[in-house]
Image 1 (tube, helix red, strand yellow):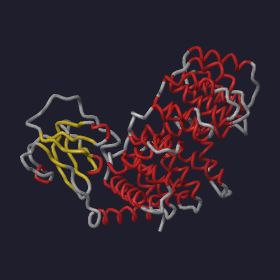
Image 2 (cartoon, rainbow, N blue to C red):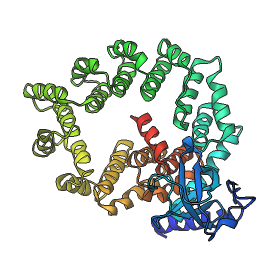
Image 3 (cartoon, rainbow, N blue to C red):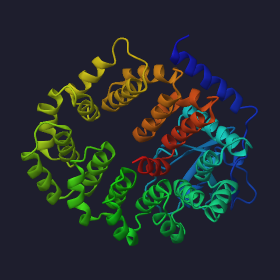
Image 4 (tube, rainbow, N blue to C red):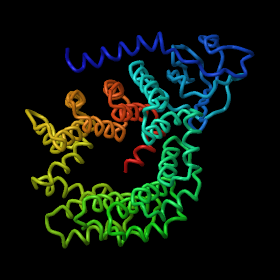
Length: 450
């Protein structure tokens, strides 16, 4: 049986189980004089669907199908949309058509059956992990954030309780998880205490949270932390300042581009690319003139490329791609946009045998995702092969890459990861499935990863 056949078989089995033992309770119907969701199927009745996350509302819909854990509706545009029960707070019966903006299909609301089955399996697995007495606290916080995306009261109360505890490391970690779950009202005292902590891990997480929340009141201390010698502090400070739009950080960020430490250098590339502007482009070009072929030159070219400058793309293709040590990373960037040289290089690298070392397998995963993103669906087989390996580190990295890519068509390939015996690996698989299905959550996860 091939890898694809095994995946299809697993999905079919999951669908069978979902239709029997795992039937979920349908969302409440309000304003319908006691009508149930099934009563609305085929009726000439318009409803509004209220989603759990941020209570977004999709109006003027008609119910056309109800399953064991989902229901489907038809929009006025004749577009069919599917909702998981777990993602919906309530269904409001309307008196008639209401004035509303055009309903736009989103990644979080339209799933094919096989995608829906995998997401439902992910939700069941995270519930099991959350309820397990064996789950370590930080893992439990992570899955609580996943449950919190759909407004699971028990999970959110658990995180809020930890965020109010006396242990600073736990408080900051819980606050981060609350952000991932969709909460933006985080106690400022947690941020302040975390930023002044003597524990580097706590301080780094607090810096990251400040950036994610775009807390401009902390810009001053972040500018000081940007000069910290430790990459564990200065790198997240660079990323956070970029999210705050701090142009005062630009001179120091230009210095960090030349740092030998990869974490500092990559953070500077991210930050300058995020800040952008003609002043950044001119600074980068001026620095390029005095920089020979090196990793620093590569970083400068990537910044220009990220900012859409023609010189950046030209140098990446004509110069960086010709340097053997720099070519792999340059090819990843170019392949994502479908550029032939980058795609050809990666496709060639994926052919034949390879050493099963972490770094080799992770590069293959990055290459496969870049090729798929560039328009080569055949690279999917390489991802599936890597997911069948015994290397849990690689599996977790693939899940991260899938979150960043965000193509819901790839949801089914994480089905085996969700069922992994290692709960940490399973949690990453569940994160990928839910993020690919839910655009808002995915955006928060991408920001968290970066």
